[in-house]
Length: 169
Image (cartoon, rainbow, N blue to C red):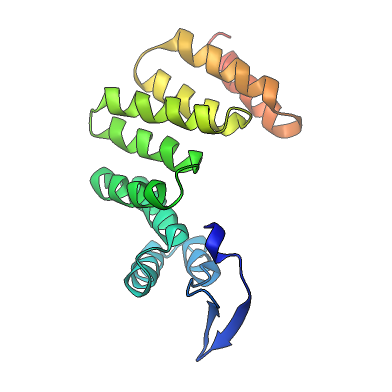
């Protein structure tokens, strides 16, 4: 979160920022090492120390989403949105979690909100295209992927064009 971008100091073996936020690098390293259980425990511990740590809430929500724990993911992404109303990624991911719970209306509202908050980010359109495809709306997915491709460059644009071609776009 924005408030976590302050001076960092070492205290008793962990990296702590002056404003109370804990760096999540050590937690992400557990995740990258293929240890989601340790990563989950570390995100949860960080949130127990500081319930307003929106970065840890976002990371834990992302992990819950990958673990197909949609209700828990929604709770964490909602925490992020309350702390950072402009966090478009949290809206997108909360929308995907809502769709997993068969709340298509809520999912669509979150996807649209994500795009309204960050219209120049191709990832928001790719996320909504994923929702569109899961909903069976191939035409809307094509439109979103075309928009994402137009906002992207290089390898990202090539990957989006490949996805677009796969759905006949």
